Length: 196
Length: 196
Image (cartoon, rainbow over all chains, first blue to last red; front, side, top):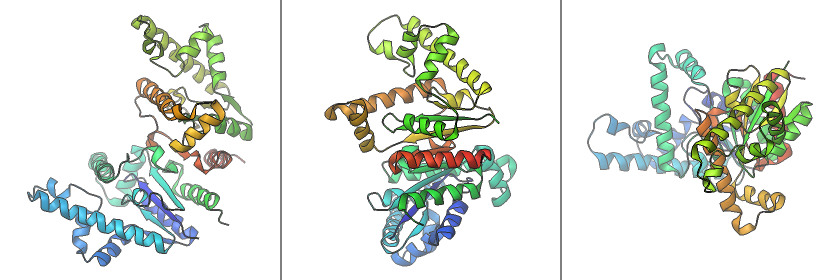
């Protein structure tokens, strides 16, 4: 049986790491930045362009480059290429997919489990300093900016609200611990899919 | 060790029933309407008044009774009496508390686990017809109205947003099944509190 676990996540919540461990425990593939490589290859769009627009709908506008229409269409092309790749992957294999509105893209598909990982601001700051080298005094501001972009990207491309419990099957605050979060997700998936 | 599990829930999600089973499985007390009885006794406010204002901040206004200030203060009195009772219970015993902004009231307390239960509209309608005798053609509208009131009550009395994943430790869509939801919550609580 094929199934997909999508993981939406606040920046700094450890959602990517949790997703990677869930995939390892279940013996299925994991896609986060790997999705960009695949979508780039599938679509023929340059990978650098993907990295610029991936989950950031307004990045070039913010940087002051004025070619509005050009940017928007490039951003949308990237979204659509990722969209196609997500559907292709879902039809071919079981996997964990992090971000990229995968829950929305796979709406109506069978055996899709939608997870959201959040964390307290305190824990997000701690993680951003420890793992991503953020400066302590700038961390809160930077984290909030990144999460605002994720929210804006998600809300723009879907008809849903990022981080609202009713969009997902299961939402976990990773404050309980990353391994513990993994265990809960794996237990949930096994229950839902009748896996051994 | 004392602990409290608070359960926020969409109307029609089965959250009350899930909470009751969680309390039974963990061998702790359960408060939903029981809280009204207790708060009424503790405060000396008539129980009928409690039932009018419980989790419904604007009920009498909507009914066209014009004594705005009187209503508001009565509504607030009920909220504060429930608030006191929740804190009293939490200091005395382990329990499950459904609704009444208990997560907000107990902010900063040790060993409090905040859960939110949601469900698809389809499942909420099914449940409301089956268990609460709603007429099928009116169910959607009525459910949405009740949930709007819950949201408005919660958002009015707290600094948070009802149903936003980041407010809670764990959010579950009860579509996986009520018993399954109970099992996940119990497993989560045992992990978090190091219970056997």
